[in-house]
Picture 1 (cartoon, rainbow, N blue to C red):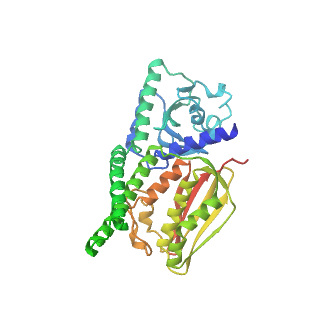
Picture 2 (cartoon, rainbow, N blue to C red):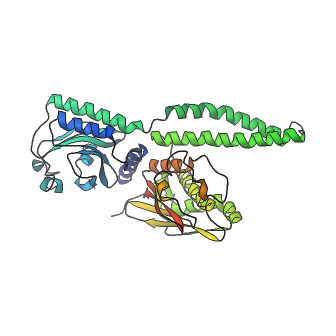
Length: 388
């Protein structure tokens, strides 16, 4: 039962992170909603609050000088238990909140009403809520207004995860491209007779380019599915040591040719996830690390265990990432070609897909260190069973 609840929570957090809204700068499209809610519902505070694994984070906060609070202090964490508005007329009379530090101390919440916000997958990821320092109740008309405004906030949260045109284009292109690629490979194999040298060269070029296009359409499909929060995952218990071993196998020949050593250390932490997708994530990070590495340098994978999450650090000894580019490297079609020494340049989708896959697991990925001495990428994933 505990495992089922944990799996459900990981799925919910994955849907939240799949929206791409969490930990983004303030935006007028959300601030407009909280200003309107505060004005129409006559409350001093209104929030678009997103409930993460261990915190609530405010995408917009009108009348409250905070960006996040611990989840243990969150009214919204209770509100997302069901799809209806949760109203607390007087927090001091409610045993769930009577000793809450946000009730007993600033901002001295007495009244709360929050309507959950759902991701496209249906998971409840947060609320639009209004708060007051005095007890009260919403009228039926005010409840209707809160529902309407929350539906508006819900649409804004989903706006970054649509990608319908890319999805349709990728799907429609993939089948004919795969067919053309297969036919060209048959010609190249000589099964229908030998080709003149000039034609053989042209077919070789065509095979290589259609292969690149097939991979690109697959990448675009993955990117779209991660942004929708609908990436198919075969969830199970996955040992990160095995993930590391398989990823090393995928890049070891490239690393050998580049003169780059691959090393790993740390405990074999067990997480909940799709083994193949996690291997894809680590392989992409390792491949990028090898590409920026000089001969006789090391790419290292370090695993760490925590009570709720596991961390995997991928460290290289490359030239580092320019500070003004760090914030953009997980965006689609952003390429950092300047530091690439080994291997072909890609389309700039690898890190965007990597972030999407990690988010689909309820995890995060970030550049945690970069300098002229190298770069560290850190991914954090929920463990199979929380401790403590």
